[in-house]
Image 1 (tube, rainbow, N blue to C red):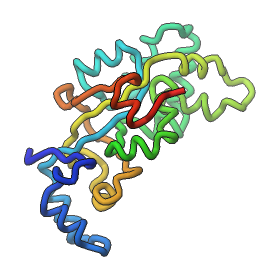
Image 2: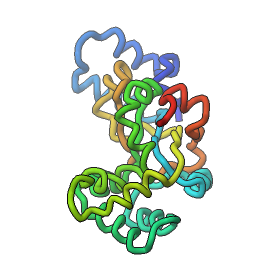
Image 3: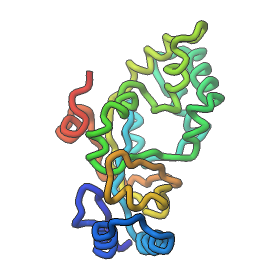
Image 4: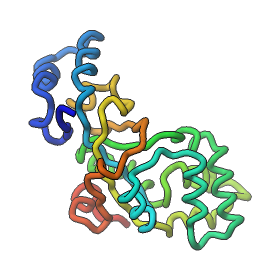
Length: 225
């Protein structure tokens, strides 16, 4: 690897790319985009994953890294939950696996945001990740269907009561992300930039794990309700 890019620190940006993006007042041409992509393939980028997990899950991440979500991982995580009946666990798994706005949109991905600016300016949009255990793949169905009759709202309450909010900082090979086509936005206007990894994040690339009571967490997200 040539280096690590932190979107909050312009001095870590490759000089070639910094000059091209800052000096240019026009959208990049396709040729320039391809040149940037080729240039960045040997770089890693700093990413932040927002989540709410149990201490056991965090211990597993420290040991095994962040794994791509799939049905086997979802099943394992749900079966390890305490405070849920077996019926509730089966409901949690079945409803989310079949709901198009939850598991289907996050299968085989690890989502992230770029830069502390995004964490701060989009703290309201990120807040559900810190309110409910397991991410959108676990709570989305029950949150969206909370006004429907027959939906087990007790599960949503339990998801809210489970886990601790964390921000996981990690490095990722540029070419293993899905942000290749948004180079200019990522560098010039980091705010709101997000993406997902196409590969597991090994524990050696986990740079830090910030708990909700840490200085970093409160400085970027603020105090949680």
